Image (cartoon, rainbow, N blue to C red; front, side, top):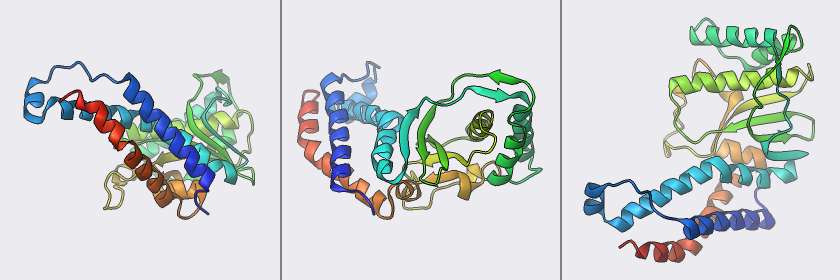
Length: 259
């Protein structure tokens, strides 16, 4: 498997469009950094600001859209920024989630996603049903066998407090879905599009103790190849590289004015 020619073209067009939009509307941050400018040059500081802006765009928009392009041929449904998600949860499910989080945080139990899902679904329709804020689902997939996948995409290196919040969110998604259907075939997890520690393995130690790592976290090759099959990750990097080479003269020209 891997990327088809049409998928590669769609991803390339998406990247070119995003970069060109940024270039056409770009003006550097107005923060005064006189020491940095004199040390490194105004053009380099402008480029640094531009790169930070692109990094934000990749993390908040582009990776999700690329994931949908890759996943569509292999899944029944693939949607980014999924909005057709329920916003009700049972009070008993919230209590069960709190129990799970407390026991994991206090090291009184080890993470086991299958057991956690089963425990939450057991009470997902019992007790008072309450409305909560509509969840934000970065990526929703429905497999051909009916399995539902709900992913939160993360590119930052999280701290311990973030990890606990991520875990609670994953469990809440199960409870919210269970309030409508008490027997869904559901997966909730984190997707990390690239390994910031490359060439070393991804440092997952911060997730240990809170996350059932093999069953809740997909990083780099594991994530992209899950969406599109073996070889997808390497082919995707090639698309990004080719677009970068194509746009390099335009980017260089755009920043000459800052010299």
